Image (tube, rainbow, N blue to C red; front, top):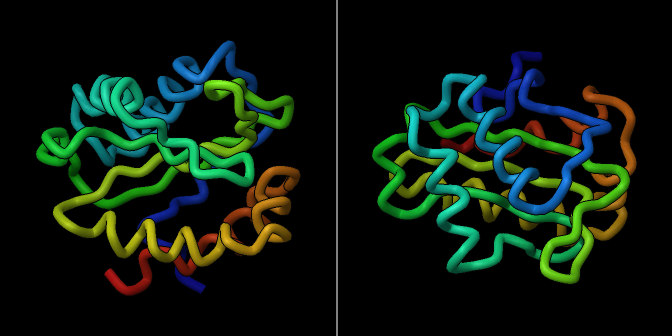
Length: 148
């Protein structure tokens, strides 16, 4: 099976720790940068986005992403999945999974819709929060972006 072009296995990082949500968002930006998905400035735009709108979506998941203006810094639509087993305080909520998103044009709509379909199932969200296997996380999310 060919690897998902939107979620490379190298973008799945398990067993991480973060001092706070800002540290977690910086780590998300670093993953997208390491994957070559974004140009300099996008990680800073992820921090700016969080200052205006929380990226916490429930079920222990946040979806850090850049501002609308920062889409020009996206080279290709890419996801990173960062797991924080001990949790990160996200304005009074606990986040165990950050799904970092960099999306070209309007592709974020397709990606977010597919991600929401998976995360609406509490059992699947729980699998993401607790998995110790990159392959298991990949198998759960690899269908995202297949329609792009």
